[in-house]
Image 1 (cartoon, one colour):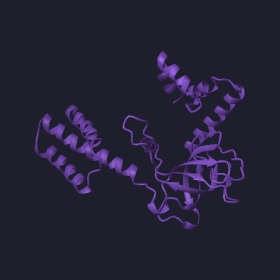
Image 2 (cartoon, rainbow, N blue to C red):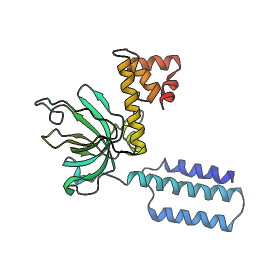
Image 3 (cartoon, rainbow, N blue to C red):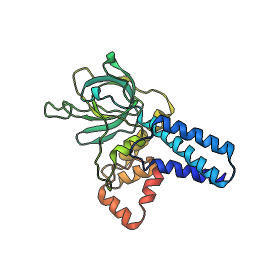
Length: 259
């Protein structure tokens, strides 16, 4: 059993070295070969090889399922109207707000293919964040159902192998498209104040706690650190503070406590 487990882990790790996913025919062959090894042979080596073959197949299936919900090329840059819920703790910045959005439906069926179920959206003041009459971005809370006019694209990140991999982070979060909200008259509407499910309940609770902390510590330089420790939202921590935490060896406390 131990050899099979070690082999399974090795097979899953081997997939990470592949530039693309193996074809389905190869995966089926590996799975059948692993079953044949287990039925016909005995010994630790047999268990390790069969485990490696099954581990590679399992990792490939999970990767395929994660990559499957993809934005169609025909839908990139198009104006779409979607209905769904705010699925994450919104992050407010000077120009607007960012949040993740769970798609429930596309109004009018205007998309060329089904949209990915989870989007990362930015909502800027003004028309799509460009120059023009500045309209304030409304307050958005986790769990609210909205109808939004959006323009989407596939996730893209920097290709520097030693830098931050934005596309990988989005993939880990199940986000397969990014975009921004278009501020057109009457196109964006709040449809329901809260849609109950476990995820929305957790995110709304985090939002309430964060708001109470920020009200109790107005303009305090350490307010962002307290928020990170309590609810895991680290986005308000300044870079200088992160450097201080790293030099004093306590970065892991900030990262782990709130999570």
